[in-house]
Amino acid sequence: MSTLAHTMMTAARSADSGLASPGELDRYPYAEAPAVDRVGIPAWDGGDPELGRVGRRAAGSRGRGLHGQLVQQLGQMIVSGDLGADRPLVPEEIGQRFEVSRTVVRESLRVLEAKGLVSARPNVGTRVRPVSDWNLLDPDIIEWRAFGPQRDDQRRELSELRWTIEPLAARLAAGHGREDVQQRLADMVEIMGHAMAQGDALTFSRADSEFHSLLIQVAGNRMLEHLSGIVSAALQVSGSPVTGCDRPNETSLGHHGRICDALAAGDGTAAEAAMRQLLTVHPEVERVVPAPREH
Image (cartoon, rainbow, N blue to C red; front, side, top):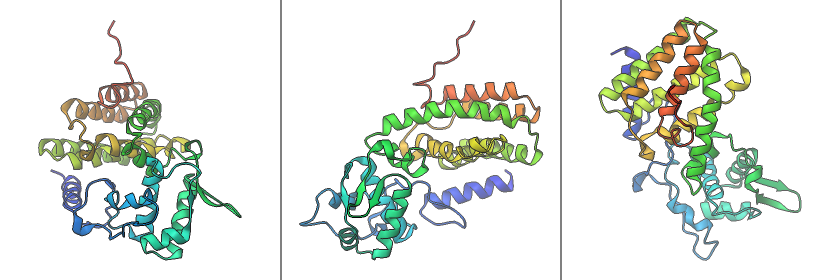
């Protein structure tokens, strides 16, 4: 096993056990946390019953700080529909109920406003915005939708979007011929192979995510590059062990390897075809993209 594969698998196991490894981000915010690790949020007795539900939703906010936790909690509640459109959000009430400062509330609402979830206007205050105003390409919103009542629609839409983006990215990436990138992609395939052999679905998922993000980033199209976060989020919500989806398999690994081979050969057509095959057999895409007909 290469040093890179060993490092990545060790880091994934550390994260899975709840230990923070250097430079690691918690990208699985919906995994249920032990009760002793949860943020102590007072019940909203006598207050708004909808906002009071947040105590049961605060699972993945560890390590995010008060500001990040509040963004996470309010964001989930808005996307899930617990806080409906045009619902007023009173900063003073939020600060009191969550026992955070006005600065934390203010900064959290600014983040949610940037995502299109809320709007703040003079003499009107801060209100929840309708779904049509949300930035549906924001990775946080993608995750919140994928683990809420809209999970089926979100995963279908992500699958359709990947089918549009990634075959083109594979074709374009084949024309760049960067050896360092090709080696990194090959490293990810190696890591995925080792992870699958050991039944380590978490490491497989993370290597898979890096593979697809890197491929888009080297396609040479800046607009496509901005969509790499969407693909990463799609893989997190459709392929991670948290969702209980099908485990990695030899077919998927083989298609990744063929993409690498096509890139090394500078064959854009083969790279695109291999990516289409990979997306077609993916369990989340198979429902919306028909398999190619045999003639």
